[in-house]
Image (cartoon, rainbow, N blue to C red; front, side, top):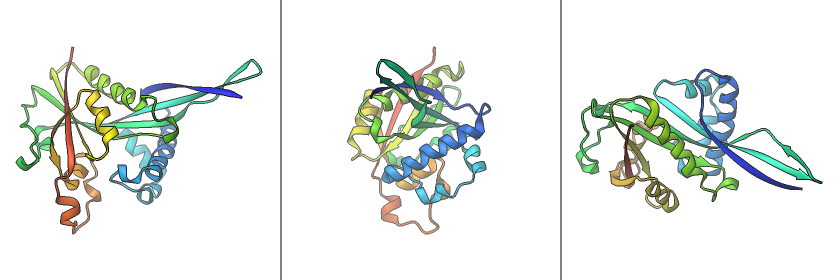
Amino acid sequence: MAFHYTYSYFRVSKTEDISASAQRYRELRLKALKTSPSSFSSTYDIEAAFTHADWIDRLTVPNQEVFICAATRHSNNNGLSFSEGAEWIGQVTLRGPLSATDFVLPEASGQPPQRPDEEEERWQMLSLFTLPEHRGKGLGGNLCQEALDFLRSYRASPPAVQVRLMVKPDNHATVKLYLRLGFVEAGKCTLAEALVANGDGHLLPKDPDPVKYADRQGLIMISRISRP
């Protein structure tokens, strides 16, 4: 039986079918944590213990937008075509808008100074992931583009939007993807700064290892986009 996939991209609604969305988001997120544990600041064990209400909260929190890539499988058997329900196979998250105060990093990071809030809006992009069996098809780039297009139309002002992300520099494929999307290198961050920027500051241990959490090894990348 021959089959192929078609893909769609969308922002998860905070009001429609939220219970079902929370369950599908949980399934995708736990697959991601189990498949690529080094790509995330959280862990499978932590998030597997979340309740259904916790997952709903994650999708409805005011300062966060989740974007999904869904795959629909189409089969052909003896000339007859069949389509299965769409499976969530990729995600990326935007956190914001953030104030200049929340966005600022120490001078040692090398991050450029922030513009006034009335001139520029700020968002953090995080948690990009696609299931391994669907990689190599440009889905990650398309998913990020869906998120960036959302920011262009989110509101009319301020006229500029800064999108920042933090990535491990040895993750060469991901860095190249962001470069193709127009991101540029803009400094170095610590693991502690990345956790806070991604909204995971609560995961910091009380006595963090200074080598693991304070070394500036993470790559800061930013993209500035203009609104119509």
